[in-house]
Length: 320
Image 1 (cartoon, one colour):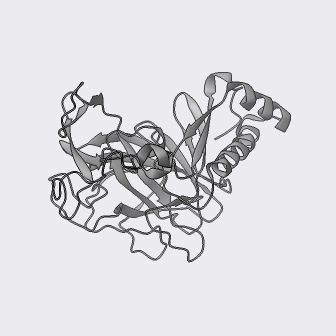
Image 2 (cartoon, one colour; image 1 turned 90 degrees about the vertical axis):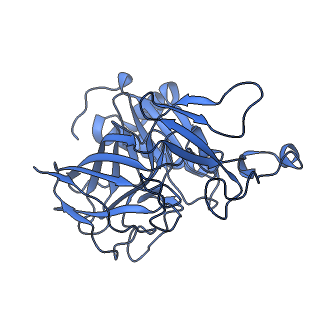
């Protein structure tokens, strides 16, 4: 078991098995690294790479083989910069057309945060107090200021076969999941498709509401620490998330590709499977437990849903 401090010297925008490996790690190793923001700016604010959710990685995990489950535990996820940015207006997909037509322009100020952009606004992040606040525009009624809840928008492995999806959508391999429960203390379970799994992490968010209805969060650079574990021949059908309180299955699908109800069905079906595999529940038991105790989360307004079941209602775990 070793501890590695890994500084990325390049970034990728695809979850591909063909990208050169950043580092080789073993299950149980502690890895400390960092990510740039969605626009390619690092902890100093300097733009060091192209935008579009640049990814740190890939990390080659020794012993990982196709058909295994990779478990990534985020031991630490912290903002490492005192500012971020978000979109200025909600996505049209989150609104009815009559409520947005002519309401206000998505343009605010040209080049205020990034060159060539007029539709994003700056947020300050107080690293000492853990509060993020809107710098401008100023509100007439109150100041927008909230506790940060750092999370990683992108986490995934190299996709199946020669498919090399960009860091824009999500899928069964993970990807740009944008689930606000994937933060410090969470464990993400992913299927392995290639030797070494080839893990990528990126797209840090200081704060994001359910659904990422703006199309962005408070986008910022991030410092993170993680460890990995393997479960042999136990690949899930899509991403699973676990923390101290709950199990969560994610109906993770490419944005715009399918309706939200499809994501709901995917998440629910996988939870039935998970409760049977790890807790020994018969299908009818899992159905009734889900029906009475679960909660659905809108992961993105563009199609992904999650289902969470509180651990307090579960029997002792069989394994894993």
